[in-house]
Image (cartoon, rainbow, N blue to C red; front, side):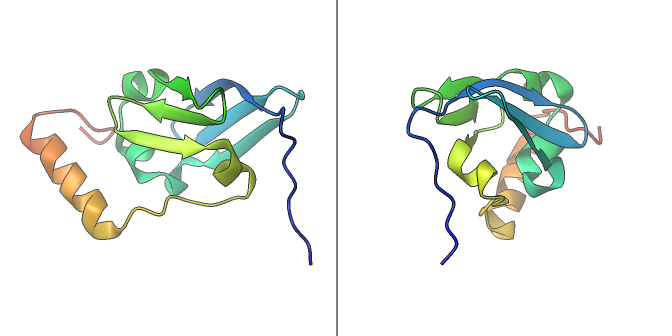
Length: 106
């Protein structure tokens, strides 16, 4: 069986998000990227909202407070897109529009 083993000392050191890609820089010198389309809340957030992130879990995850989004290093390294259901995402998107919050399409 082929499994991914993650070094217990490995941590996220930096995060960059542009209009199409999420990139994390790791403590071992690697950079890993994933398409932003995998993370609909990030995709629909503004550039300003995507820049406002914080490391959580001692660098094992990332939190975007303005987008109510949390991603784990493990999930990104394993290539897992968001598990959020379409119904949950639509509810979030509708609430954003009601509050007058911008999206990347605004």
